[in-house]
Length: 296
Image (cartoon, rainbow, N blue to C red; front, side, top):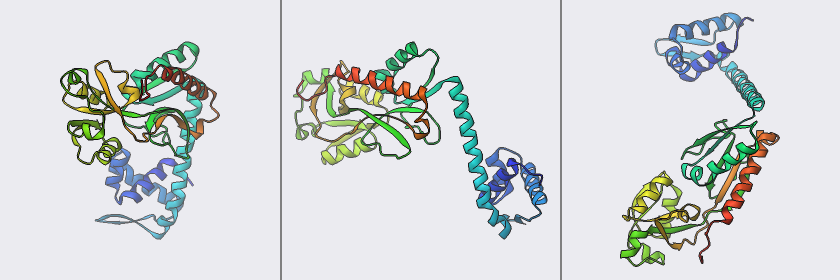
């Protein structure tokens, strides 16, 4: 049979979209090429895969029977490409690392600089992004994340520190107000926090809270609190580093921790292990310099 992987790609695209027009847009080719590929595949295997109609392409029984097999071919091709990329990266000794913008400034940037001095043969491609990259789909090799839990069985995880939260106000604000010391005190003021789970946590802890500002950026949140317009909830590993902020009190919640994570497929990669060990050791030393207990 004279057919190739592109024929399978076109077959699956038409099967999934129901037309050569939609499939061609998904594949980035013209409609004529897509239709020609389908016809060539049918001719090669001696089967009619689709019924053509004005409304589009509909799978024949033969076509339906082959979809699952074609998907296996597609998956095997993706695994081969991924393996080839892994081998190429291993040859270059490159590590793609991702974390949030604030963690990049506080700890990841200095840690990577130290790693580069110790391992000049390994390059680190650094991405600072508020979005949690998908390690399973190979968007990055290693990530540093702040999260309540990390229980994805596909990932190797290492918890490097707890991340308690506290309320903070601007130092300038504290000069003109009585600094709140309890949840009841802080509920009287406009509040700011991160979007998602932190905002939900705040509403659950303070049902009557006036949540004025929620952001997906830790940096933006810190700047808002510094204006004095809001009191804000921050991880103490961030709040304690801000000279223009004053801690009000520690939140009595289980906020999770800071985690280094990488995919199971990198478990045996020595350059990944070297980077993870270096990052963990750096954070251990760095956290000893933090003042993050309620009594300091």
